[in-house]
Length: 288
DNA sequence: CTCAGTGTTCAGTG
DNA sequence: TCACTGAACACTGA
Image 1 (spheres, rainbow, N blue to C red):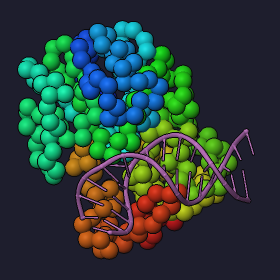
Image 2 (cartoon, rainbow, N blue to C red):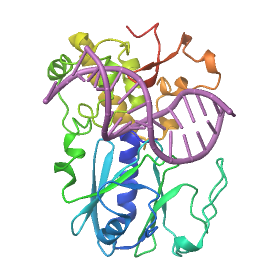
Image 3 (cartoon, rainbow, N blue to C red):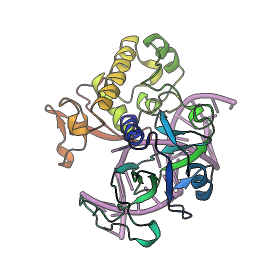
């Protein structure tokens, strides 16, 4: 579920698992189960093998590991990427000699198997394993000498957990955009890390219709939007992107409810339609 | 069998 | 050049 909170949570988990460790294995060796944008799997492997992890970083939906030498690996989870960490003392078998867990559904992967849809395994010298899981394979990996200063990260806009424009600054930025605010919120060159559910949640909480042209929002609306954006993201990060711990009143819990045409939020009908190329859930009764 | 899906990129249009 | 739109990508689960 990779929007900013999920990516930030993954980054923290990976840093905790690998910090101060040397990397002893990267698998698979040659097969590219995940797309490498700037390096072959072999180059990627060579860049990481033997290097020590000294930290990590993130901007928007990208994150990277800081090593004791360059370049560094940069990750993007695409639509369905995630991470699984194992801190076993005993290593799993080598990739080539084992079958991936093939059971679908919520079944636990047996300890002696690699999880279904695992695309990359990073092993540290103490046996800790970090596995990138990505069913749909929209995830991307690249190498960068300085992730923040080169594309695609250098093209990102404001990360809400770092510097973020004031309401008055936002009015000016949005004033140039004729597209629906929903589409503009998804523009990573403006709001790095905002994804589909966050955009919907933020519009809902600030009571703004996703159809409004960005340039036509009032200062009061932009101020409310800004406040909701920061609070939703900060809160989601605080609970480790665990949606079960999102506040009860969030639209999130209702937007994909089970009964198809009966989804409501406190009695108000939720409408689903495509805006800015993405399915949008909103509450016309409340969002103007 | 068909279709939507928590993202990004690229081609085409205005 | 910029802003914007829609298709493509890969694959599962409803």
